[in-house]
Length: 457
Ligand SMILES: Cc1cc2nc3c(=O)[nH]c(=O)nc-3n(C[C@H](O)[C@H](O)[C@H](O)COP(=O)(O)OP(=O)(O)OC[C@H]3O[C@@H](n4cnc5c(N)ncnc54)[C@H](O)[C@@H]3O)c2cc1C
Picture 1: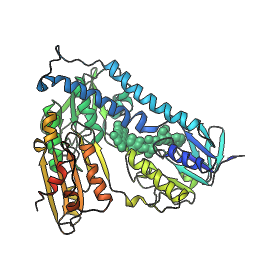
Picture 2 (picture 1 turned 90 degrees about the horizontal axis):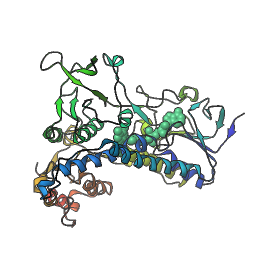
Picture 3 (picture 1 turned 135 degrees about the horizontal axis):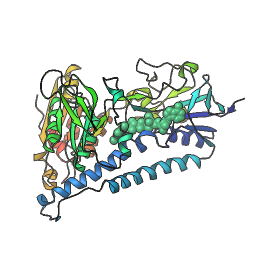
Picture 4 (picture 1 turned 120 degrees about the vertical axis):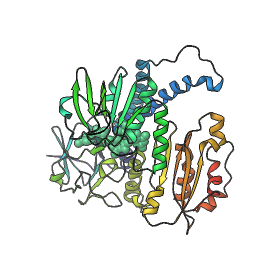
C-alpha cells in the first residue's frame, strides 16, 4: 500500500524547497524527499562554501597588498586554515539548517530523509515507504564528474566536495580542469599560501569565453604565481612516493607535474543514474540529463524535472528560475517558459567575471553584424580609486537592430554591474536607450553608458 500525496518533490536543492512551499501554500499535501544534505550542492558543496572561502582569500590578498593603500599591517600575513574552515562551515551550516527547519515546519509538507527511486510513473520508494502522487517534481541536481583517465584508480583525488573537508592547506594542489570551478579553487588556494598548478586539456582557460577574456584571466592568475599547463593532451595519474604525479604532455615540456593533492574539476554529471527513471518511463539524453520541454515537463505526464538534472542550466539561479516557471504555469496560470530567460552567470575569481548573453564569437557565428565596446578597468574611476584595475568591460551589440547581444565585465564589481545589461536585455531595450540612462557616480556601472557610446565595428 502506498501513502498518497498531492505532490512529491525529490531533492531539497535550489528548486525543490521553494516549490514545496508554493504547493503546500496552495493547500496540497507534499512529500519532500532528501537523501543527504538539505540545500543541496549550492548550500553545502557549491556556491556558499566556495564564496565564503573566496572572501577569506580576498581578505588575505588585500592584507598582503595593504601597503598599496598606505596601510601598515606589521608582520607577514598568515592564514589560519582552521579558522577559515570554521567560518566557511558556519555559513554552510546556518543555511543548511535554515532550509531544513523551513521544510520541517512547513504546513502540509512531510519530509522523508532517504534515497528516492521511482517504482512507476506515480510511485516513489524511500526506504520502506512507498509514496504516490499525480505530480512528481525531480530536483536531484548533479555531482562532480570523475573522468575515466589513466591511473585514476591508483591515486586519491579530490572533488569540489572532498576538498572542502580538508583541515590543512595542500602543499601543492594540482587542479585538473581550467574552467569555472577549477579557477575559483585555484586562486583561493593560492592566496591561502599553497603552490597551485592548473592542468587543462584545451589550449586556453575557460575556452567557451572569448579569447580576450581567457587571456586576461590567464594573466591575472599567472601574476599571482599560479602555474598553468595548457594543451595538456596526455593527462594521466600515478603515485610518486607520498605525492601524485599528473602527466601533462606526451612530447614537449616537463612531462609531469608532481603535487601533494589533485583536484578534479572537469565537469558535472546528473544524479539520474540511480533514480529508477526507467520504471517511470522518463526519457534522458545520452549524458543522463532528463529531457524536458520549455515548461520543464518530461515526456511523462505529471512528472517535471527542475535544476541541474535537466541540463537546461547549471546554476543556482537557473534552478530557482525553473521553480518560478513551473509554479507560474501550474499555480498562477501565467504562461512562462525557460526559453524567455537570458543566460547570465559569474565566475568568482578576483576580480570577478560577470557575463550575460552571447560572446563576440557566438554572435559572429550566429551571423550577427556586431559593434563592440571595450574599456580597460584602468579607465574606470571606481576601479582606480579602489586600486583594483585588472580586467576590462566589453559589450557586443547588433549593428542593425542596436540590440545588446551580450557582455563580459571582468573587473571589480563585475558580477553586480553586469545586471544593468541583463535587465536592459530582459526588458527588450536597445543599447542606445541604456546609453542615455544616468548612472550613479562613482560606480563601475556608470561606465556602461559610456562604453555604449564608444561602439566600434
Ligand atoms: C564548487 C561549485 C561552485 C558553484 N558556485 C556557483 C555559484 O557561485 N553560482 C551559481 O549560480 N551556481 C554555482 N554552482 C552550481 C550550483 O551549485 C548548482 O547549479 C545548483 O546547486 C543546482 O541546484 P539543483 O537544485 O538543481 O540541485 P542540487 O543543489 O544539487 O540539489 C539536489 C538535491 O537532490 C538530492 N538528491 C539527489 N538524488 C536524490 C535521490 N535519489 N533521492 C533524494 N534526494 C536526492 C541531493 O542530495 C541534493 O540535496 C556551483 C557548483 C559547484 C560544484
